Length: 347
Image 1: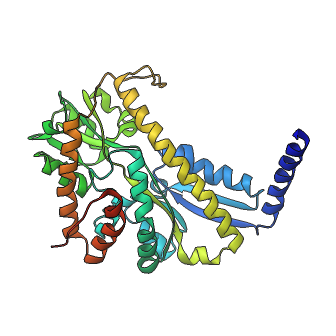
Image 2 (image 1 turned 90 degrees about the vertical axis):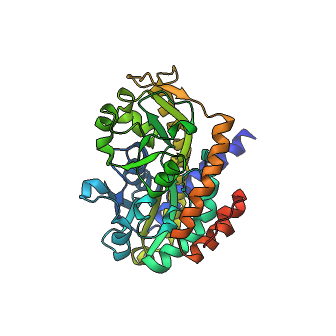
Image 3 (image 1 turned 60 degrees about the horizontal axis):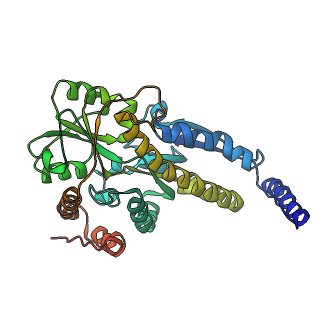
């Protein structure tokens, strides 16, 4: 039996290079996500620079740079992919929310308080995005991944979501602003780089970002309490200019789609680990493997927090439905709505 297994394994290994040899030589140009974040450094960069060449036996190669290294800010990525200036690209959905509220649909604040739900919501709505980007933007959607959970950092004691009432909170999207305002707080828009001095000088009382992003930016030095309740996730699309995709050999298309599926899965799995790593390292837990540990208090969500989250979620969805068109709301109800037992109403 062992010899048969060894033979089967050897045959599989031999087949891989043979399949790779069938691929026509192809060189791809890729504009990835923010180059200083772990999603790019640990996943995108090695995927395009090592995994793809190795798995294709050198038949497919790629150049990749983060969009910030290209002098871009992010919101223009969808337009640049549509026009073909960018071939393959990664872009955060929230950047396009002002262009069309459909881009908020899978990441409305309060919609997915855990990674499993976030992934199910994303999968449910992904066909809608595939159609939307393909028809109106000349973009072929290849996958959707996520950053770690977006959570609350505060510079004074907080016991739960109800304590946000009356506080000034830095937000980075319209849906986060709706969420904070529904809690009775005041939403403050500011760039990520301005948050540390704002927390330090009490310009804001709290701020929302990824648990690990906050640690990397040393928010633990200027804030005291971290609420371990995901508000939203900040998903990102992996896509390609539709005409550039159509020019690729079908074997290359199949190879790339399969490998990008793997990349997306890896980033989703990492998001869960990185969310917990952010909690651990900001609070100085033993599980933190980083050399520098924060001393924040980790606030675990109570049943009251979970109930309040669901109540606020309804208000956030209702406001979003007024921004999105009737087809968008209908698509939401047919996919995410059915999954979570929710309904958005266009008034």
